[in-house]
Length: 304
Image 1 (cartoon, rainbow, N blue to C red):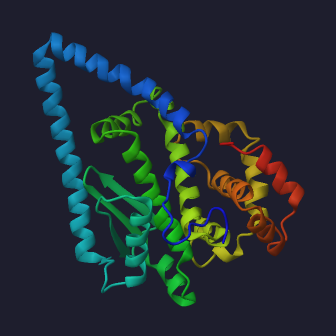
Image 2 (tube, rainbow, N blue to C red; image 1 turned 180 degrees about the vertical axis):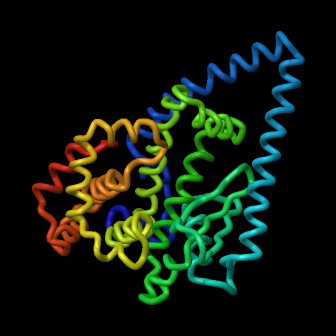
């Protein structure tokens, strides 16, 4: 049992596992949100018709988004398999246990699909939250009877939702989501989004308790269940060094709410090194990773 693995019955403290920069990046995001809220409040008070138009616009857009998600959910119900006690009970139990351990009480549904190019993704809008998993991701776990990598992936999604729920009210969340699509202003919000993804990866590792499973899950998200076994850790390390020394890669990251997969790999490894060095060194030896190259990559990684 490692420091990052949670013993049965222990109280899970999400704050222990969030990325160190998450709270400071949240403050930076508020720099973008608070002035907009104050400006809207001031102009609405001074010009009541503006408030009426804005309210109509917000409700209309919100309604469209809600209808879009509900249509997607209806399509999933008709064309995919909803995870539950009778369908894939192992995954259903993982979701239930993860929510209980993290302390997330909102409803989250999981659907397994055959079509599509995305291995796993989450959709959310107010009360609508569902995770879509590609069937190939599940097949690999069914074959090996090992669901640790799915546990990591589900825990990172639920952890992502938990952090956002703890940080602000739903209306502020929706403002944040809207600002992400506004050029220039969104640059103050995107670093926070990247930190939450890093935090979700850490929470997933803390709950599944196995570094191998977290890296396997990351590999499956990156390249799929058939080929992930052909991707070595040295590949992540060498590509991360290229990415982190590239001007254009830095620009690409700067305008994205998603960190590069190579950065996520290094941040998982860094967290394991700090939290459970015995598992970190065991993983390095098992996969014959060049320790010097890994340490150099860790010291120069994005999101330190």
